[in-house]
Length: 279
Length: 321
Image 1 (cartoon, helix red, strand yellow):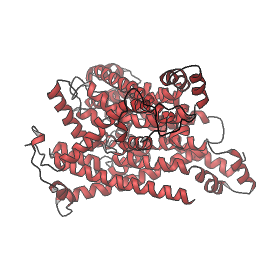
Image 2: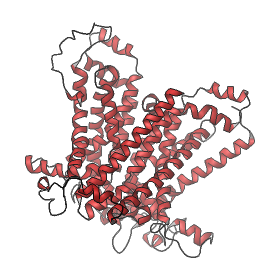
Image 3: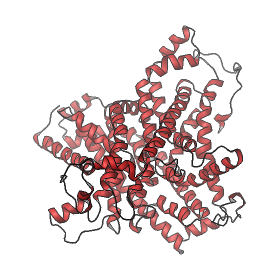
């Protein structure tokens, strides 16, 4: 298409400013992680005076980061997998049948997103404690409790995205399979799920990210042994010192896999949003 | 919820409906929904109802051990929360206005930046894919990592911002505080925008993919400049995206707890005392859970009314258009 010189230059300027806005904090994270502690203590420098990887070594001892990572991994992976499995079933029902209460289900699923987390944090905490007392099933301060909580956070959005994906798969494929004698569940596993793999992956990463980044419930619903990285990173600031280089190193380690997975799958997010949530 | 009424396993044929070419398995869709419904009920709906119940009780530290026996006090918690002459009511009202101001700024700025990026990246040029990936990175970053970076940038003595302002540009002599006092509000807004605008960008990019190129060609032929094309082609085509996006951005920002909590800790400076942090403080720091619940319920009511009105008017506008 046609672009005037003025338009071209404004585009370049705006994009440069946006790039700086995004990149400067990321650069500071990287460069601080490779500074020795003495370098971050006094005043800020754009370039490291000395490149050192001590932060990446020390961060494991300053706080039990390894244990936090394991907790976070178990909780987020389980929450993501369960959430997506449940969302697939619900999205299949919503996409392929016009049943009574369908609209109500979609609307109420989405409206749970509206609840302020703070509203159900305390009741949920008390319910978990009571369930534990009554049945012996530990939900409070356990990974199970966090998994159940987190999987519901991503569920509504996952259902919406997957409904969009499933809707975009032609019904003729279902019907062809049905003619071959496949029942509804077989159609789901043989036709819809294989066709929607990119969408399912994108939604899984979304569910994982939601659980991986959650702070409020993690800070109330965990104890020493079940603490996640979301809360654990606070351990790098003590009363006497803040280990900024270790914080940045740990944040990097915690972020890189999620960011990479998301960026790798970003085009499927766009596809999913185009197919479902936005239309 | 009516959808929990699960039909029996052996699905009876529907006598009233004429068999149409669509397959009918009435029980199955409900069965498929059961896990989702049970979980949403367990984690969202039942706790929400419990929250409403708690807001009618005197649930202070004296009663928390045996919370189901806390004395019923009717609407007293609501009276205290909403009484603008009392200290509690004043503070709540203050944090409500702070949250409104913050939300308007964050939603507006995030939308603006997202739209600019989405429109400017529509045209193919070298490095476009790289920029797109880069712009999405803040969204993918876990919120605590993102906010921790900013809290480092905004440190008074060791932060990058003051280094630039004071040491490099000599714009100010006295190092300003960014995380306490009046500046903290602006710090919070910037951090939230940094984290949220890529989501607007992502959604708007998705929306723009559906805009046929010949519309732009036609507008160009008619002599429409950049702004005219934006107003006459892009924005109307984005209307369905905008509707959901603006609502989602509004709700996220309004309910955001994580960003201020990581940036400021358990008690935010007065000028940046967002409502969710304020309620958290009222419940968990002073141990008055009944009062905290009453405040949360008010917040939920407010959000439902605003969302309801918003959806009503945008639907209406769409129907009228």
